[in-house]
Image 1 (tube, rainbow, N blue to C red):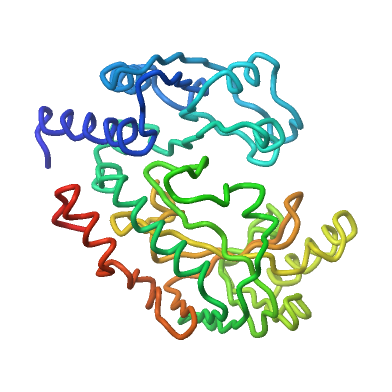
Image 2: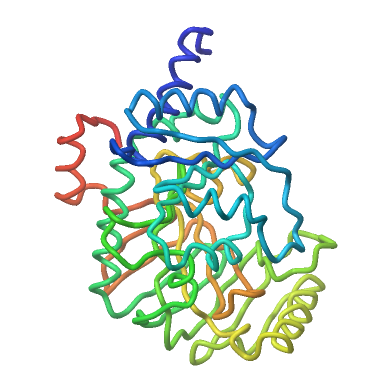
Length: 342
């Protein structure tokens, strides 16, 4: 166990990684910290403010209450502050779809911070140099953009093949299709790679975490989505699968057939992320990936664990392990930043 002094140093190291390497503060910029009451401690926001100041950048903090799940807009004060900043650290749970409507025509870099406690910032995950995360992201982006065919399998029974689409509704809404150096949406300590658009998908996804399920819960039994020509044609399983099927049919009534059409898939890519499903690494662990439908208003989603992903026959992931870490470009980045363990 780390001593109090060592722990505080680790916390500050994680905070500095957020500010210097993920937010990438540059002199002359204006940084906004959006903070949700009760979500992050003022003392922790103070550490982030100090790190921003140390980097030579002006910062401002705005605090606000929790925004309810049913809200369809943000306050004028929040939006005004957001649009006046060059970069934003979001210590706030904001609906991505609503946020996108406000910022889609603005070049504002947004970092969603998932470290809400000192313990989060002290983890190896949060202290892993975010410049290496960017290097890994760039390599995966290069591979996916130059590939045609993909095949995804997993021990749970997933076996799905398809081709890479040139467009993705999910990626267009949530990610900027530019080089990794100018991507405007980042997750700390993250991260996930840009969703890979999907067409001509054939096969099945077997998921123990379908987010189309109603909120009544139920036994942790797997749900199987059977695909033909990129479209769900059958949902198999027990009572849980029936609830998922009913929920998707409701979404089809609201959003049309796109609610059961595969849009894209993506997953975590941080080799230091803890796979604990309740921790900050739940999304960014390499051991988990996710599928999306072609509607943003109520999309089906399905999580798969310990996946093997092949792009044009090359294994990118094998049983949840990232297989590109020995790529020359990633090795060169590690040497440049003085990183020995990645």
